[in-house]
Image 1 (cartoon, rainbow, N blue to C red):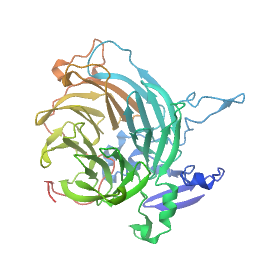
Image 2: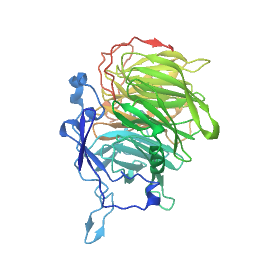
Image 3: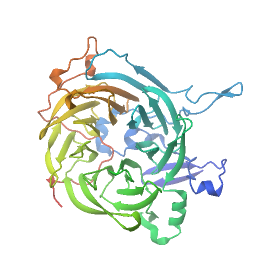
Image 4: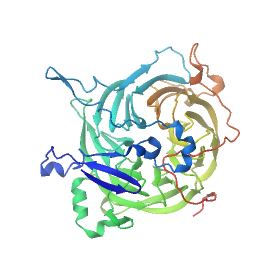
Length: 489
């Protein structure tokens, strides 16, 4: 056991030596996979995990303290020498409402976890992946618990899928790669870690591969040295982008797991990275800026990302970014509770501001013509794009804690028009639950909840006036005030 100090946080590291690997396996795996780190009791609350400055202490009461010392839900106790199912002692419970034939916007059900907080979601078809501070990932199928797999170290901050691979980004700065078994779809096997151990060893042998990350400390450039904040795929799904609190974003080639590039993007933590608009990359940071990068292909399948311009510069942290399904609109959420959007044309033009939250916008998701914004005020605003503007269709209320992550999928069925479509929206919260919503693209006036539906699950609010703002976001800058300027370089 050894103690080390990283920033202002004292960490205790234990490494298990009970497991042995052949050298060939080590080249494809993470030698630290069986390590774990514990923080002091003062540093384990979710607001400290998200590095929120002390000036937000007035609203920290909306967060509750995480339980880190609970047994793993994937442990396999035995009874009479026979191993039990890893799901038999699941800490989750499912509360799904019965189908009633009505077509409305409202709550379908909840997936409730007895301990821990939900930090990441990813949905594809009938599968939902949930990541939490338990360091494990759960898999749900048709709103029923289906499977799960251990991550062993690193709070799960982001999940994204690319073909038959699942990528998870973690608090420990690593990206883990998983694959579904062809024989048994409930089994997920870890097939690697980014960067791979082989690349790490090879890179560490060359002094030119080391960069200064802080005074008197160097690290190889292919590794993130702070928490992963988000993951995104290129439009052709051949490159993976990872952003981190270490102020960089990195580019990974999916087919061989190589780190192609590391870009020192901002003056503070990078909270979000998204791609779109034919080869553009957008990064949002705690320094209050959104930057645009242009990808240029290099020889041998490499990339080079060139800074284009600063899209937004303000005194509030950028907390989340999203590009709509048609790749025509970029959305950004920030710690002042506002959602800005830009429309694609010959140039990116600022389209306006969506005002619907009292506290920080923590996450965004898009589906069809709809955009969903989740906030520290516990609400989810549903917006529909109409012409050059947006209207607020509804506000989904039901969480008792900040909404940390969102995912949206088309609901199966045939529709006569885009406005007749329905979507299934998943919301993860620090209240320890994932809620499942059915959302209609119809206007609010045309929707009626079914008889007996809980009214708190379907609320309409006008959003024409500004709400008082406060700060609660993934990572905030402690730098000075900045003026707002759109399109400045």
